[in-house]
Structure formats: structure tokens, C-alpha cells
Image (cartoon, rainbow, N blue to C red; front, side, top):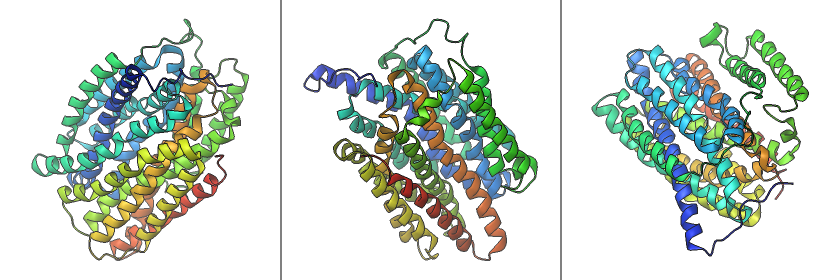
Length: 464
């Protein structure tokens, strides 16, 4: 049985203020990470021009960051179960800031990739640790609302970040987008240290008995799968055709399962996967992110290639999707507390499918139709997010909440890696085959709609 969180004392002003302080403090590192992400998306066309790179190589600006970001999420969650969440929060923020400094000084594409990798290593802990902290501290009756409130920092950031990023890119250059991130990161270190509870872990000899072999096996398996999806930039073999990587990934994954079953204190308890709601919500969350991150990667390039917009104008257009996300994100959490998770998830993801299908048939006639599609897509993506968080962790026992949050976050953000990698490969191939750029983008948008449709089918089976 899951250990109940602290008693609900919503009538107490002191407790309400404490809850709000914790939520705001958890928003600070998220603000740092999201500011970086929102600005780098707007900078992609400028980076492509600066290094004279093809689209599939530019996609690695996103992929090389997301790879360690995804892989290390369960590690942060598992370490937090033993060492305490505040300590891991501060460590992640510090690593992220080191990578940001490298990117700020990058003079070539390789150095930019190094900085982005370090950033991803630091950012990996922010989302799972925040979700686990909220899941522990807030009772089930208010958990959806709390998760929705914390998530609202995302669309708020994406409303302002692209606009500021566009101004910096046009006025100073693309490297300047990393400067505001350093300031926000310094503030995040202070507020997390001061306001997030410093609860110590469970075991004094935790690190000595930690399952580092399990970490290596899972990380290697996930990395190999993602490299198989976008292999040409690494092995020279076209994407999804390097069978050596696929076979290696399957062997590593099988080895991980066998190893974890033999451990008395495994890195990832395989019992987590016996919870149907966890599996279903993780898959749905992955397809949701496939669509959301796919649009974040594709739309700036689409607006440049099809509509010839500059960075500042692209930033304004991207603000529309962020604003619509904000409208439904907190509402989605409240509806999940009232209805259960299934209905907000299905309604939201059906809206995403409709939006991507709309883009797949959208002709190159004006920017306003693009804005309508982005706004609709944001409304759907916002509605389902908190409901998915709530469904994934609702049945997980308290001692496993950290690693479960990390594993869920890894599976969720796998959709981000796959959308950038597959989207870049499919788009590059389509651009080489078709005459009009808009036709190439329509192919990728249609593929994205099909992926999310599978998520809708799984979401229909979620429990209320």
C-alpha cells in the first residue's frame, strides 16, 4: 500500500503559504531549463546558417541535449530515494550551469554539442525530482491541481522565452540566448536550497550498495535505441537501418532485465511495471511529447523555409502555442482530481492528433492558419499533462516514488528524442525528394499525427 502523504490542512493559512512557497521554488529550476529550451528552438535557423549544417545535423542540437536528459532521469530519482531530493536538485542545477557556460563560449559546432550534453546531464533531475516531491507532499485530492500549477511555468516561459530569444538573436547573435539562463540558474540554486525540504535518504551506506551495473546497462540500452533511430550522423548508416545497433540494444535491454531480477536492491524495481496505470500513462505521455516537441522543432524551421520569417517573428508565433498551453494546463489538473485521468488525457490527445493532421494538409498560404493550428495543439497538450503525471504515480508505493518518477520521466521524454531524431531524418529525406518545402513538412506532420493517434488508443484504457 502506498503510504499516504501528509495530512491535508487546506484550512490552515500557514500550510497554504508553505505549499505555495514549495511550488514556486520548484518552478525556479524548471524556469531555468525551459528558458534555455524555448530560446534554443528559436535559434535553430541561425545555428543552421552559422555552421552551414543540414537539417538532420541541426536536429542533434536537440538530440544531444535530450539523450543524457532522458537517460539520467531514473538515476536522479533513484539516488534521491537514498540521498534526499534537495541535494540532487542542487547538483543538477550546478551541472546545468557549467554546460550553459560552455555553450555561451562555443566557437564551433563540436563545442556547442559538448555544452548541450552537459546541460542535459544537469537538467535530467529537475522534472522527476519535482514530480516526486509534489507527489509526496500533496494529498491525492489536491495533487492534480498542484502538478498543474507547477507545470504552468512551462507555457509562461514559452510565451516570453521565444520573444526575448528572437530579440537577442537578431541584436547580438544566437550565443547570447544562454546568458539569461545563467542568471535564472543562480536564483534557482538559492531558492531550492532555502525552501525545498532537505529530507535525508533511507540508507547510510546507500552509495556503497548502489546498483551501478544496472545504471550502465539501462543507459547503454536506451542510448543504443536512440542512436539506431538516428544512426547516419553517428555510424554513417541511414536511420533505422543499422541492424547492429538494434541487435545490441535488444541484448543490452535483455541483460538489464536479467540483472535487475537477480538483485536484492535493484536500480529499477521491475515491480513498477506491474502497475498497469504506470505503463499506460508513460506510453501516452511519450506520444504526447512526441507531438509537442515535434512541433517545437519543426515549426521554427517551417516558418523559415515556407514563410521566410525572421527570428523575432518566429518567437511571436511560438508564443501562441504557449499561451494556449497555459489556458488548459492547470484546468487539466483540476479536471483530473474531479473526473479521474482518462477523460482529460483522451480529450487532450485527440486535440493534438487533429492539430497535426491539420498541419499535414495546410497549404503555404499565410501565417494565420499556422497560428490557429498551434493554438489548438497547445490547448490539447496542456489539458492532458497533469492528468498523466497523476495517473502514472498514483499506485506507486512511497519508497519507490523517486525512481518511478525518474523512470516515467525518461519514458515520457523519450518521445522528445524520437521526435527530433525521426523528424529531422524524415524531413531531410522529404526535402531531397519533393520540390516544394511545404510538401516535405506536411509529410512529417502527418507522421506525427499517426504516432499520437496510437497514444489515444492506449489512453482510452486508462482507469478513471
